[in-house]
Image 1: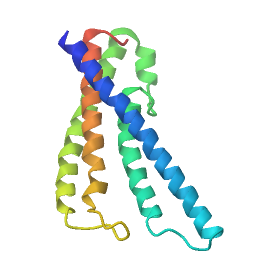
Image 2 (image 1 turned 90 degrees about the vertical axis):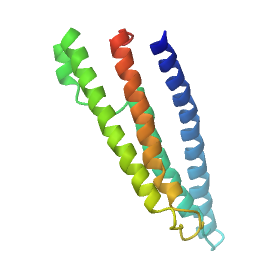
Image 3 (image 1 turned 135 degrees about the vertical axis):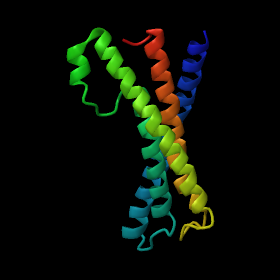
Image 4 (image 1 turned 120 degrees about the vertical axis):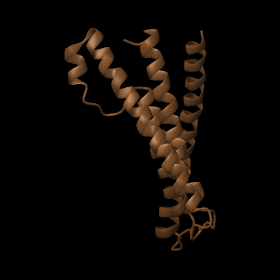
Length: 161
């Protein structure tokens, strides 16, 4: 029961993350298209669009990696678990999930550390704190950590084989 609630909660967060990713992609597409139009048709480019698009790309990369990890869409070398099958393949998936969980925890700690160090710096054109950009690292790491826990929970509950 508790594992099921954990899985449902994280899947709900992933659903929201998917919509955030779609919104970031839309913002990036509109800004870059407008930048090209403004530069080549109107002869005057926007001052902030490139920076906002870059920020969006960083956030999309970190959150998108976590989203793809949950849905099993990341590139993986799974020939060993595919050939092994059964109990050994399940054990290998568990080991990978535990290793991912440990990596995400280290990335989360280091991401917070670097984000704290850049709080006083500002982006050149938008004048927002660079912490907003660097916060993508701990946010993505937290999502990877949560998704790793769910994959481990699914492995123990036998939901996904």
